[in-house]
Image (cartoon, rainbow, N blue to C red; front, side, top):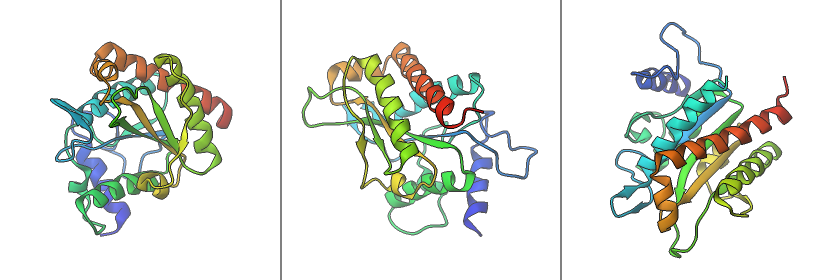
Length: 224
């Protein structure tokens, strides 16, 4: 079975209780302005601290971001709405479970061909005083612009002055063709960030900061 068909089937399987995909009566792949790539899931918890798991934070914040962007009129796809590993749906590539998970994420984006992809994550450091957001970009102009706008908006929320960084080694950034960024929303290893990242009110503020940056990006790159 061809890769594109497998990914379309993944979409149909994910369309359980959400209107995110609107594929029930549409045999064609959906048009999308934005794909929200929800980091980790299932067996893969991502970073953790005690009972706190990155995969859960990613999902909660991503769903709030998805709803807000939809409300603002964007065509948005979110690649998981529950707690499971995307590697389970990958029957078309080879390698480790981790590699298949990453390939599923970039393969989905390359099939749908959105205008951007946001890969949502939570950071970790051995230095517990490290805190705040960090945006990681591809080595291409639109990704650099998107990262800069997101970093500025998130810095304003956190009161930080971090600069976005180039992600040379990240599979999703290297293999995704549309402008893509990894959004590290804070540090699970930092007590203050951890409290904020688990707070529904702060999660809504993160979604708003991301949406504001995306508004700026589309006004500059896709003014019509």
